[in-house]
Every structure is written in structure tokens, then in C-alpha cells.
Length: 233
Image 1 (cartoon, rainbow, N blue to C red):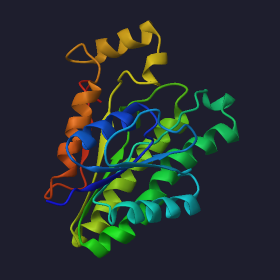
Image 2 (image 1 turned 60 degrees about the vertical axis):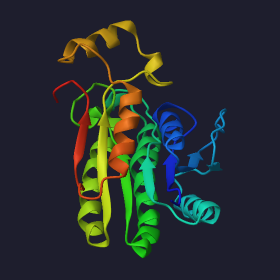
Image 3 (image 1 turned 90 degrees about the vertical axis):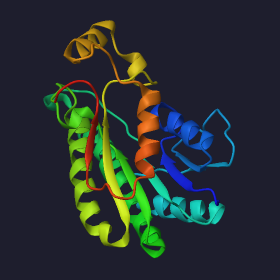
């Protein structure tokens, strides 16, 4: 059976790095996108491509290079994101715009360009990584939360437009998990997260990756928003 190909943005670390490993171990070809820090790990059947997803022209090249490398794209996972923390009165235009351009506009560009090839194939899967922050309010996270809320709406609209071509589009909302971003959180914050959880725990990133792998292969579920957390939003 011919191996499937997944394009994952943000593979230098965090969720993207774990996803690349899990998909590779399950026989997928990996096209990994990074902005500046080239991944410091190696996995079989992979190609790491430098691209700034906040720039539409670079996303077009990313999709082209991915197809040139493996011939097709079966799944796209929009995992890349950034944050800039400040209360609204102290949030600069640059802070706001950088988060929106990467998290929301970047996801839109990747979705748009991926659709152009998936429509020709009459199949494909798009999975957008949003966040529990899209549903819960946190002081200092206006840009991040707004961008992730926008991804939810983008996911639902894309699912409606792409469904007739056999393309599934879903979003996953991870809770707090320990990655390069989460590792910087204070003990007080982690304790508060656990207290909000009905299981008194944080998100297990390996379970998250396994769920996304499962979702990538389902053909009859689309337009859904999966809250992958044990906190009730």
C-alpha cells in the first residue's frame, strides 16, 4: 500500500514535533514546516521545509515543494502558532498583528493552498489545532484567544465548502500540556489548571497525537470541534 503524506506546520517543537514522530512511526511520509529553527531531530521518510506561514507566497511554495517531494498531500495539520502576552491596554499593534498573522492568517493560507490540490484528488484531511483558550477567557491572551476562536469558525466554513469533494476538515482544542511553551508555566498556574480539570490532570500530548492520527484517517466526520481536555469549557 502506498504511504500517505502529511504536511505538519510548526515541527521544530511542541505538538508539531510529537505529531511528526507519531505519524512517521505509523508509516506516513512527513513534510514538516518550520519558520526559523530547523528541527534538531531526524525521522524516516521526512522532508523539513523552511517557510513563514504568515506570508502567502511562502505557503504556496511550501505546498508546491511538499508535492514535488512526495507526489501528493493526504493530510494537513496546522500546528504552528505563537503567542504574545499582554493586557489589551498594553498590547502593541505589532504584538496583536504578529499573532493574528501567524495563527489565523497563516492557517487560512495553508488551508486555501492545500484545498487546491486536495480538490483535484477528491479526498484529503485538514486538521486545525486551535486551543481551549478559544473557549475560555484568560487575561493577557486577547490575541491568542481571538486567533484560536477564528480558527474554529474557519474550520466550520471550510468543512462546508470542501465536503462535496470528499475532504474532511476538523479542529482539535488541546488543553494545557508540557511542551516548550507549557514548560515555562509557573507551578501556581499548573496547579490551577489541574484544579479546573475533572480528572485533576493536564493534557497528555502523546494521547493528543494518537487522537489526531486517528482523526486524520476518518472519512465520515467533518466540521467538528474536538475539545481534547478534561476541563469543562
